[in-house]
Length: 227
Image 1 (tube, rainbow, N blue to C red):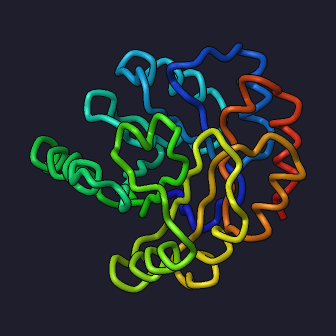
Image 2: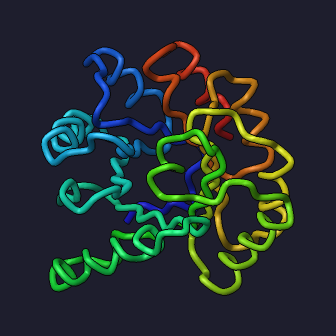
C-alpha cells in the first residue's frame, strides 16, 4: 500500500487537459513521489481511463482524487476523497462518499482510500464556486480547521487548496504548527522552484499542477525540493 505520509512532492494531472507523451514521460520519470489524477471540470470516465493507462506505463504511484462517482474506476494505487470542510454544501463534506459506499461499499478495499480534510481558499477558483466554499477565512479559522482535522477527524491529510493562485505562506504555516500526525498538503500557484521551496518549508507535501501545461521546464524544477 502506498503511504501518503511519505510523499513530499506530487504532480497533479487534469484528465480534461492535453499532455504529450514526451512531457508525460518526463513528469512520470522526474522523481516525484506520486501522480494525482484529478480536476474540477469535464472529468469523465473516458479521460480518466486514458490518462491513468498512460501513467501506468511508469513505476510512479498513480492516485485518483475523486471528484465524481462516474469517473471513479478501479486500477489506481490509491484513492483520495476530498472532504471540503469550508463548503456550505454537505454533498462536498461527505455526501458523495456516502453515495459511493451505498453503491460500491461491498467491493471497496478501504485500505486503498484516504480522506483529505480540504480547505479551499481562492474565491475565484472553479472548485470554490462549485463547492460553495467560504473562502474569507483568517488565521484563526485555519488553526481551528487544523485542530479539527488533527484531533477530532484524525485524518491522514489536511489539504490547503489555493487552486490556480499562489497562497499566503503565513496561513499555511499556521495550519502546520497545529498538526502532529496529520500531513499538511499544499496546492496552488507553484510555478517555480523558489515558490516550491517556500511552500515546502511550511508544508509537508506540495502539489504542482497548472504549470505542467504552461512551462514544463519550470514544473520539473520543482521536484528538487525533495529531500
